[in-house]
Length: 585
Image (cartoon, rainbow, N blue to C red):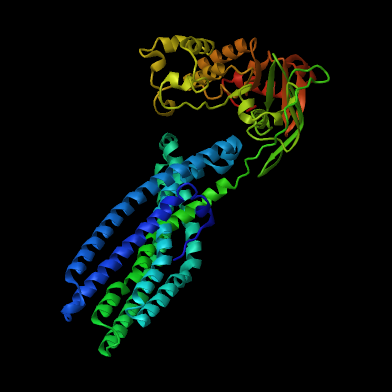
């Protein structure tokens, strides 16, 4: 069945030479087979007419053709391996390059499962399409004409018949294509659902076991697995029907060819050597088709995977860009200024509505508000994970759009709620921020993060292994390493986005002490649910319903007796009861 996919063809740039070479070697193999068949048929035909054939020449030709076939088959295996390796490297480089361009905002929209499936399972499925299916399709399109050219002198009628049937057979398989299109879509969707649910279950295994939901989870996983198996069986049934149809046509055609050649031979219209050559090469018209159909099942998975990749590559990664123009604010303000900023997600309207915020350099600015008020969205816009739909953002007088995201993040950086720790050593994780950092610089950063004493007290110090994704570290240690890493980056502006929400009380106290010390050296933007810790912020912005409802110092906001006062009072009551509730997350 024909599986021509524009996305896969477009992505084959970089290893098309391998695809063409595999097809060429297959044709060389076919030429060797034709040469071998010609010599053997001539040899056998000459047994009845000894003077008509040079037996030594026939043996020599058969030997040469056998060597050609052997070498071609060995080379095909080698080139297929190289094509597979090259396609994996090239495609994964392109996918990862695209994912890096997507930035955090689009990555969250796409989802981790889609990214993993595209970069791992998708590539594994697609490389079969390139190394097996496409070369087979090229070979399949050329070989019947070559065989017709070789057989037309031996038996023009039989050769023409076989050519016509071979040209009709492959397109005839497209009868199954409408079903294939439906199956390939549902196949990949089912695969993504199964993979996503499995990964989610694996990551949350501790929680699942704690609440005794393992049997329920296993049941759902079994249902999803069964659905995926049914999709695979549906494709296999379709392949079986296609093979049954093709084999019926192929063997019927070969049988008819035998009758035609036998009739011509009995009438003396062709020689015995010509009859034998036609019979020996007649199946070759269809051998390429059967090989192509064998690889179509795996190629189908590649076509299905390409749809997921196509969605990734179709995501617009263009960012607004303007010429760099440095100018001072009219009121002498130095810092980051958001004016009338609006932003909304695809499934939510009005996350930010006409928001204006001033983040003055050298000061500490705090953002508070109920969950969903837009605090984290503001931090994402400040980091340029995404751009606002309207409004203006200026960094020390220069439009944000003048900076590339990577350049901007050298000036402003963030400590998120959950810090990502990578497998390796403490030193490896710190060097992410500054690859050429010295031991003294790392120790200084760790000291500011209240972690130096712990690290230097370890037997291996900075060379201590943190485990898989930091599994050997506590929540507080992870956050402190994240803070130290940020400090190594030496950015003037630092955003703390709920940086203490996932740590114990002692670690939280130490981190806030660190933040307090940093406030005298850097410009801080602090987002925290613990309002008691932001009392000393120079300016506090209270967000409500995507708007700035109140602004001012802690004292001024308390005097207003508004939203901020209510939040502080509610949290005070909860803390008095010993409940550390996240009232203002």
